[in-house]
Image 1 (cartoon, rainbow, N blue to C red):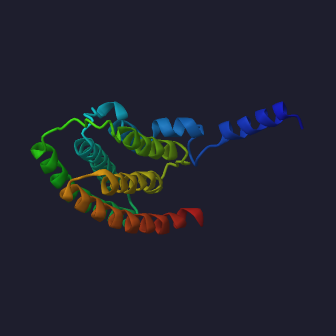
Image 2 (cartoon, helix red, strand yellow):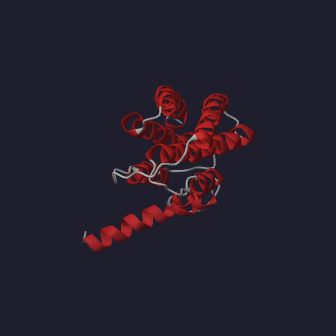
Length: 204
């Protein structure tokens, strides 16, 4: 079989990939998914206005990230039906809401100081968010809101851990570092719980 024919065959399979009850393509399903819309709009890099102050920029990225997770969780707790997923969502809501209060407090009290060394980490923040968005774009979504929440909140939790690592390595703020340490611990447990909950869909 020629590479050309094989390519057309693979493309046809991709286009024919539908999920139960709706004849839409893989890419169209991402466009229709309300959770994906929340993720895309809430984590848009255009919303970040970098100042070249590493602590301030990390805090504002964290704020955007936590607001996104809270929006995703609000959708799941309103629409979802799986008790385990809703319980995980409520756990995320509790931790991210309390952390968001601390992040807001830091942002409002921190005087922006432009980095004169040129050692900005803004590109690392962008890379962490790009990684999350790219991973989310590759997920196979379905009509099951609980499944789609789980499969999309996973890369969002990984971004949580990636931003926490950046803070621990580059921040000079004890408060941000404490938040980051808590984030790493929480993300690890939440990721494990999400993966266990998603196995029910794999084993169907």
